[in-house]
Length: 252
Length: 223
Image (cartoon, rainbow over all chains, first blue to last red; front, top):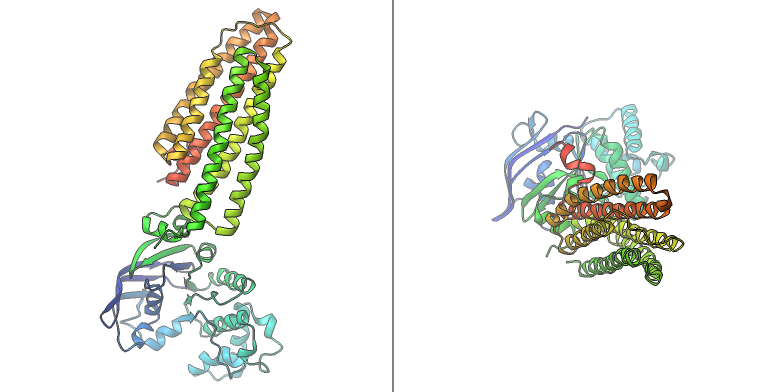
């Protein structure tokens, strides 16, 4: 099951660039939360703070608190454990090109020391089913490489790979921006199904997509969280003029 | 800045205002035709109705295109929804004018009768409501729109009064029944025009404030 995330006074820097300023945000469990805003507004940096990827950059720094359930991910657990609990899917599908479909999905488990064949088979099948890819690849699991799949299938393979380690949270950074409308629709349908089991945070430039998949939406601008509310409110009657200017295209 | 989209919204607003002008003129002409029993004015009303219907279709098409092509959000989305609904209300104002015009034609077969109802006052009020609702739309002013809502009760009262008065005429002076029935139907049409003006005002409030005030929703919805 997904867990709720409570972000408190989160600040992030790249060297002297203050990229996130005092972000406070409750992300509900088992819902999709969309983050929108212009390029460079800090939404991707924010997401990278939720799985401690931001700090992998040597010039980056983070202060504040991110609690997932009862755990402060910056105080109570290692970055490796955080990334097991928090899966991530990127803009461009990035399957391991030389690995088979099966090995792509099993990679995370093997890194965590799982070797039992039966368990691996079960998890690979379940993950591919949860990613709505099983029916399309079940005959070629070990014959085809991940890179041989279409772009949309590759993205669902990456989602299956993220799900295989049984995370509680799934971060998606523009997961459908490189996909055609049919593949995009499949990813959006998938997000709907996955919500019952995971907490989903999705960064998107496609506001219709945010409106379609997310229960709540946050608008970032210049490193600040300008507004966070129900998606319905944000897209029909936002409270802040800056949000309205952005979503109606009057911005800039 | 989506300049092309903003220009399209301006075009849509302008077209709706032209249609609004025609609808308002239709009502004024229909009432004038009734007052002076002039069938040539009825012809103008019928002619105007054709133009109003054409505008209704064109405005719907423009709004549909913008929804499909531009995927508007927030205040722009509310604006286009309001335009679609106002468009339908204005078309029905045109229908009401035609209905009045038809009744004037029916009266041709009967002598003029002095009836104790103030149709002129009711027509002035209903037309003023339409005008004010459109002013609210032009100026994007929800306060003006609210003032339209409060005018509706006056028209309803005039309509109720006309109903009982004309019922009595029909009972007590049966030879005037055709004229009284016609006056009753015109009164009912004007009351409908006032209702459409109220709808338009509600749509303006929805567009400007994002608030649904239909059916007194603002009084019953929890904060």
